[in-house]
Length: 96
Length: 96
Image (cartoon, rainbow over all chains, first blue to last red; front, side, top):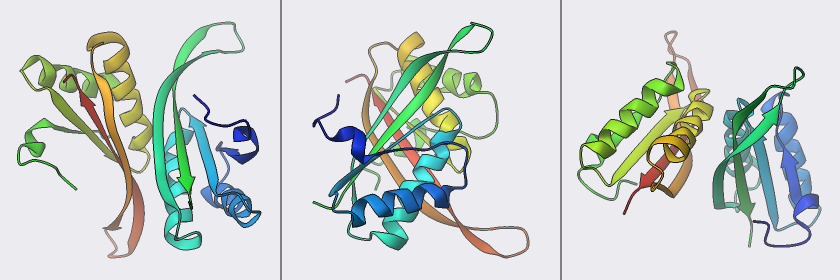
């Protein structure tokens, strides 16, 4: 799926913190010279990943475009060893 | 944004019900002869929209592909007349 070896460095994983924490991380990546940042999230954090992309694009890195959005399903195992599926999203922002 | 006049009929709006309610609506659209269904959501329901698309694709309409995913920002006004922004998503599933 990844198009380049440097994907990991440019990837921001969105969790349960306020969206602005992740916006700051994305903006920092762009300011550090990256021309592409991948925002990833699973489950309920998916909405926050979209917020992160939108806030970044509308307020901070206005030349960033949504290059690609991928959705998928990942199998996870909880503490009790029970497995279930969770949706995931991968939003690629690019200034190229 | 809409590419065709029939978009409304094929659009499922995802809200706060369990994902399966929306999966059923999407599957019903496909079974009724549509070859394209658009799943829309705003705010926290965005995660559920992704769940809806993934469950539909993995379990019920296995020939459906994710044709396009768009994200955006919409201005909303709450009961007190205060305006704010909310993220939105639009997932197009297609069996064509």
